[in-house]
Image (cartoon, rainbow, N blue to C red; front, side, top):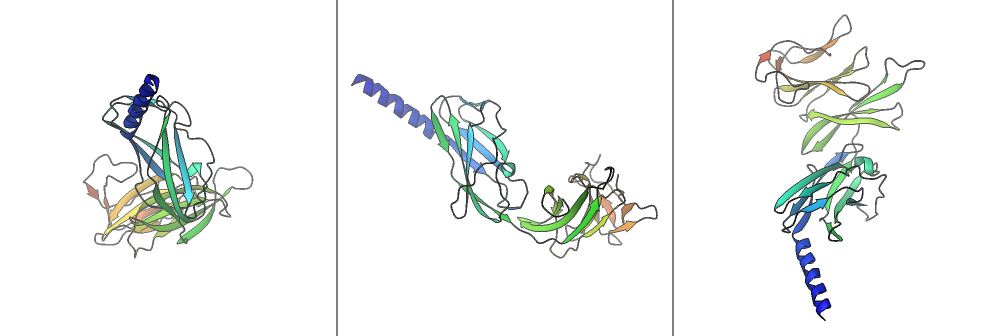
Length: 285
């Protein structure tokens, strides 16, 4: 009887401690385009009165992903987040995981995700409440096939595709695929876009994509993307006496003509100083 009583006390103690550890999932947005990164933040709150030791193995954190029909989506690989860490009592730790490479999210639809965190010392798993998000399709606004410079033999072919999606606000995306859209090399949001904007797109002699689109009442975003899907330039240009436009020079360089350059914290590469303006164009590096 005494052994049973001690066992019961230990079990109640563990259950009480377990109840003081919570796992929450946080998604910064609820809609994603196909092939877009889906970052999920796992927030672990420790109020157990003990220091928790987590991580160290591939299975310390497990996700369960289901389609709207309740079909379980199988994982395509192991979680790479294996680093061991501790959480002291009354503290919160957050780990972020991009689940897009872990699951096949090619089909548009509604998905439900939950997580479980293993606490080896207790032999317990703490489950989160589920969160939902959607993968949506988007018709292309513009597309262009280009060859990749520097490849020997027959040039490798890539395709630039412009898409827009309403994610909190309307955003313009660039998708870089193979010629037949079988493989997406990169999908990236370039910036917020007003609904009446008609993006200008031109490809230079190095097969870089130059974009100019309206992001506000008088502001425009100029961006340059490589065939590898790397963003190498993003600038803001404002409507001044004239409207900013893309211009092709005689030597094949593409630049922004008209308008006024405005230095912004969202520029890439970041400006040396923010707040000054000048009137000239931005030329691709």
